[in-house]
Amino acid sequence: MDAIQEDGAKPQLRAGIYARLSETYDAAESVPTQLANGAKHAERRGWRVVARFKDDGYSAFKEITRDGFIQLIEAIERGAVDVVVIRDVDRLTRNLTDWNRFEKACVEHGVLLSVYTGGDLDLSTPEGAYYGGMETLRAKRESAVKSVRVREGKDREARKGKRASGGSKWFGYDRVYANPDEPLARKRIILREELNPVEADALRDAAERVLNGETTGSIIRDWTARGIKPKGGKEWSVTALVKTLTSPRIAGLREWQGKKYPAVGWPAIIDADTHERLVKLFSDPARRKHIVGRKHHLLSGVAVCGKCGHPLYIRIEKDKPQKRSYGCVKGPGGGGCGGIAIHAELLDEYVTAVVLDALESPDLQKAIQAGEDSDAPRRAELLAGIQRAQETRAEARRDLARGIIDREDWLDIRQQTEDVISKARRQYDRLAGSATVFGDIPPSEQVRDVWESWNTDRKRAALKAVLHRIVIKPQPEGIGKNPYGQTKDPVKRRERLLEVIRQRVEFDWRF
Ligand SMILES: [Zn+2]
Image (cartoon, rainbow, N blue to C red; front, side, top):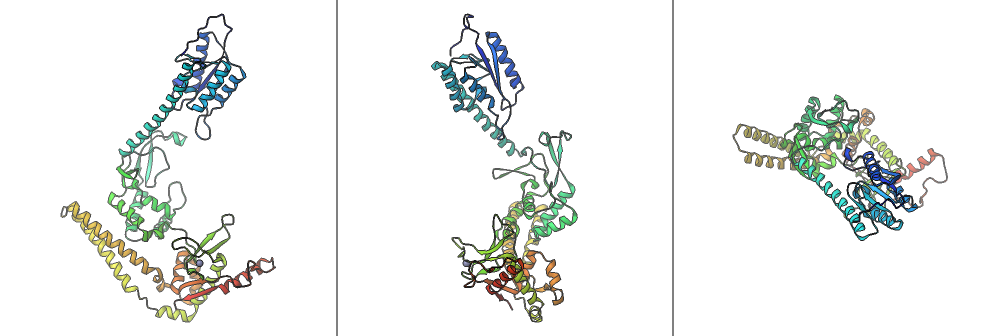
């Protein structure tokens, strides 16, 4: 490090002061303070301040902008300054590329660097260059260490059960702020979460109901009817409900890196045991498809490929979302041949018309009434088994509370009953697939009205009750790529397409 000695005989040096916002907010180092101290320093040295450069804004990427730094380099290259005044080397840059650029400009134009908290650097000397580069590296390392410390701090807080700051509001709770009148949401300080009695009750009730076999759809309908809305939303989705029900938070737990810690700052709505059962329930693959699965389309999986027999699924074109088709999806390991596709809307329409006709026909009605649901006794058996297991579990829980059995026994019983229940539920779901709606196919004269009132899942169930499957055959020979012929009339085009579809569909009835 070379100290620059002013001897008054030399012409007065022109100083440029550079200031940069600190990442860690520190009033003592604010940009105006840096500029003022830099000016005092220049005055003491007898330099004339000719330019001030500052970086005190944030870019779109939440990084401090560096327009001022670039202007500084340009000023050096123009020969507009003889000395650059800064608070510290780490104010200049923490980036070696930037540092190298700065150093090169200074050396080429004979510009000195003066650090007002330290000394002066002549970057053309090996010591000056070395010191400046090392300081940049040191600052870079310090910044990295600081972010590790922030991470470690977060980790410690989480293990203590403390919440992450901010975030959207939680269903089941009311947030209590230290400064509720603060208009900027991100500046509000959260003190704690208190129970929202209505939402907390609804959650407890829903947890019990789904554990007893009720569907999430049914809970959502109930909540919607009661006006229970998600925080910040209008209506519940199945995904949102499942996420809420399985969230460790409502069991008074803070999840952090896959582990759960007792929470500080908010009460539990359900107990930890119920939480674990909910997590298990919703991660059961036999259930998952009913819960978070894709949106059902009328004939997805009901229609099958006429070439390879693989079920067809809906395909939506990215740029034409209204143009949907059912297609055989190619793929390794259980995929189809990819050889069949058919217009979804028209196929739905055609199949619906045929099935409604069939449902209205006296023959099918008679067959349905006479049709013995051969799986019914087995389903009743399974349901009774589920109920018995649930009772056993409830009894064991009471015994545990009364001290009749110990915790180990209870865990054992819980595991056994859970296994029985999930196994029985899987079997029940399989059997229920085709037969649930047997009993409530409406009489002929009501078929169409009732059909209209059903949602897609209900319609699919009715279809599966009367049909094994629908086979979609390839496009007939000679139709080629243009089933419409020459006409542009939309009504005629539709009719022609329907005519082709009629030729391609084969119904495989149960009756
Ligand atoms: Zn196929």
